[in-house]
Image 1 (cartoon, rainbow, N blue to C red):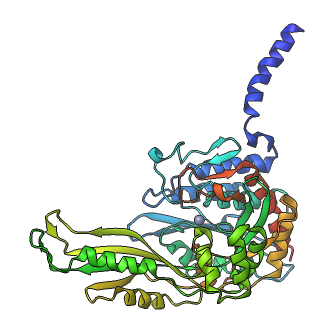
Image 2 (cartoon, protein in one colour):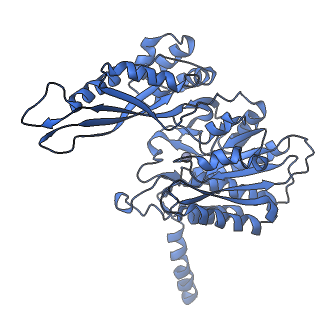
Image 3 (cartoon, rainbow, N blue to C red):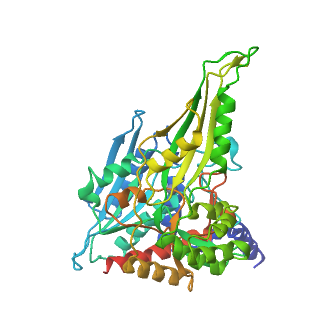
Length: 472
Ligand SMILES: [Zn+2]
């Protein structure tokens, strides 16, 4: 008896220690598989320059094949970047009965991440670490959660013998954080594989929790701003620093940057931002909430927009923004600078031409020695229309995990693959299914994390959303 209870105690101690991990209560097959996939994909350093995206794509390809998807329905599509680095996208078709007669639904996520340095992080960024109810690691949120959730849901539905009434397609891109060439190729060269009625993007949107952990709203991304980068460059004959000239490239650049800092682009509103402000006003306290309500009623209320100027999370919803992000100039400590250059990154409100922003910046230069040029070839995309089927599916998914959470369409101040799909004529809705507090959003930053509950809830969310859309 004594011996037996000793053995039981010995067996229990490790079990109890293990039970401290919040994830250990999620024991269903699909939950264990999701965790395994999550851990594996976070282990691939899929940042630009490390060449790991094709390896991750091939790991996922094997999983889909093993899960019952025909070889002809799983495509790894390699692509060589200008740098010579190989990347890839992955497309998987879940064949349906075609009973609905409708075009497929596309599910989108990206395999690449912004790089992370081990020495900057508290924990190894490329090892999934669970601690105090959170999963930590680069990509836990952006966007290996999306990849894991969609992959596991496809495999789970297949294992359940589910037959959709229309085809479902997964498309994982390989360079969302950089050139988005894989995304562009998916809607052009590989369009036959990806053509769809609309797409759900598991790289945007999501639920908002207040700091006590209570859900307040669920944001569905309907449109996004255009990402455009400009270079402001001043050149000067220079000379010896003991013989200063009246004109100096660094001072001139500083003057232009101060004018850019002081410039405010016109306040704008569209359907998505009006709905967003109407809803957000009801759950946002203080002057910010009041300013939102005023703006939703009257887009010309610039005083209200000026209040939101002080809130980084809202300012981008009200207008085009441009901000200096990099600076370089001069070539020796005892020489007058022959050039000074600043990088200015703009997020352009939908409907505004990027060329108009260039003209505005050129106007702020006010000096023929200053040249403003646009980098790359930024392209605008129109907002996606409200879609009843998507709204219903998302609401049903939320009813399962966080009942009563209102769905709020919104415009993202950041850019995703969604803009390329929208431009290619595939309406796209950003809806990752995860919930987080404002204090938990560390995408691109240090110690990126997702709460364990949020991760496993999102698995159930996607199961409902996919079966709902597949049945229509
Ligand atoms: Zn992302």
